[in-house]
Length: 340
Ligand code: PEP
Ligand code: MN
Image: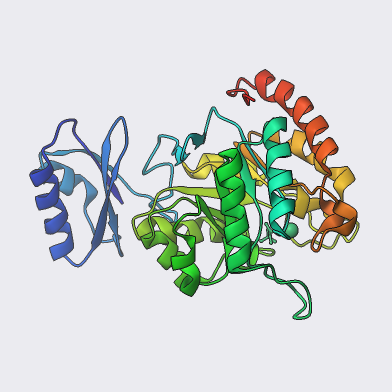
């Protein structure tokens, strides 16, 4: 249940209203948008007389029942689009950002070469895994602290903000200088991790789980927002289906649905969705057409020798060609064009 407050209500009156709600055994949180302020009431609200609350509290404009289990991420609660600010880059409605880089940071030279090249092609953020979740315990797991160090060197050289994956909450102190913390598909429902990144003051890129519904993705985002961190970017990266021709199946419907149901930016990772580099450009174009706010594209200086996910990685020239094409389409969609 939400109560939309009248304009210009003083802070102390809002607090008194929240205290009143909480003294009746409910939880509440405040959502402040550009246009209006909303007090959201959480708990079993079935017995509450909504009209009586509006009548008895002169700061309340109107009330509404929110039937979805997610509240903080719900567009009914917060109608304005959330814009996520990553140093000089803004992700959200009306903008378009491309995050590019290798699956894994493999060496200082590798990540610096890739960073310089993808920046020149128009990427606005650099990705690279230092801690890799791998299906096989014998596979390359990333360079760990050294990987983070090399990524930060590439950031220093190019000015690109960096995105990298965290595996568990004990690693958080290592992520102080990282710009965006990625919670990967396999950790989408690691609730302790979600709560901790919710308390950490950094943007989070939350990827959809391999077999998770959109409602589950939104509930995972709700964990982060309910701890106080609203700087969350959702990422559709393909889901498991019966199809084996691709690594996953890109769920394009997720883009408009998520954007309708919640106020967070939605980006698409066509690389992990397809598993095949030839499919990355068409899926990237489809994501733009479906309304995505950005893309995450695995790009490598030598995909044939990549230590992880080479088959789905574009090489630097392929990435550059793709970006030239995407820039035209982004401009066509009326989004702020990528500026190189
Ligand atoms: C990745 O981005 O490198 C990754 C492991 O992706 P996902 O969590 O979507 O599988
Ligand atoms: Mn990968």
